[in-house]
Image 1 (cartoon, rainbow, N blue to C red):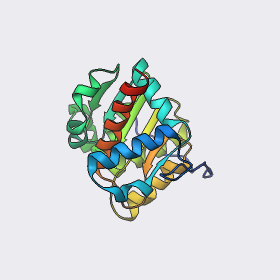
Image 2 (tube, rainbow, N blue to C red):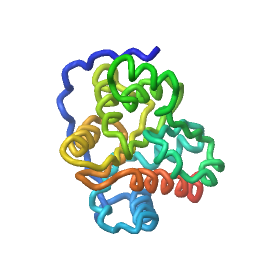
Image 3 (cartoon, rainbow, N blue to C red):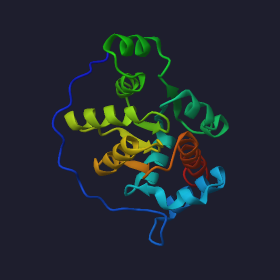
Image 4 (cartoon, rainbow, N blue to C red):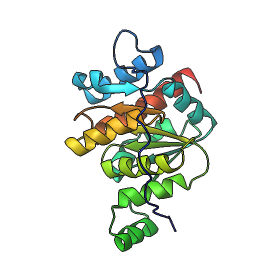
Length: 208
């Protein structure tokens, strides 16, 4: 069973180098931003997409070697391009309808998204966690990272919404976790899907 340990006090927030869709954006990140704009047709997303240093290269390396992509919803999972995925060494999962996750969430009166993060972290090896629909997944991920630093996790934090989602995405950005964050109120499942597909496509074109 997945333990739901209480979170410890927050670590001091870290400052990190900001990479956005500006002139100084790395070449690899610029390719991702352009691909996201092309897939979504939404140019207004561009200034909201932020990359931690080296995250694109890390994800593409792990796609080549083998990692697990975990979607936070069936909607996000269904939008990830299977043709691209099949050409990598990655696997795709979504645990929101996992019977154990559903049962445990009901017993503990918490969201399935929180329990699904517990299930995700039980997987061995590198993990790319894609959050476009369930901000509570980010909350639980932060709690667990505060307890024990997570070294095999990369996060795409693209959940849209009001204050809570915005704040959780900011906390992911400041957590020190390798991440791609759609900051502010922008984002949603389509943005999360577009970022993931852009990473897959770029990996195939430039690394795999």
